[in-house]
Length: 103
Image (cartoon, rainbow, N blue to C red):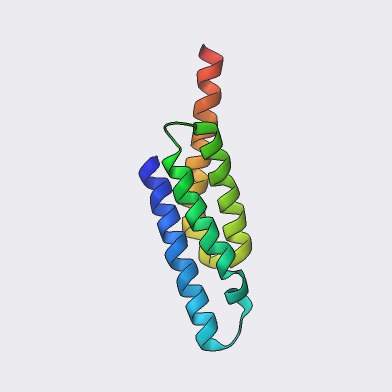
């Protein structure tokens, strides 16, 4: 799951940079203004992926938040990275809750 979250974060970072680049070239700053929000979401997703082993609850919350902010910032362009980070975040939440029920 860690590799999936890192892949989502890196893809989100690259897609956000490309969206911001094309917004500057096209002179329509619609996605360029929120491209920074997508970049921050990609960086936070990578940080959340690095926290999976040490603090899984915090990592899952960070991954879900980055999905929401990335999709808010870039809408359709952030769908694939958003799905990757959302799957990992939800999996970590359910995995954590199953451990507590069995213990």
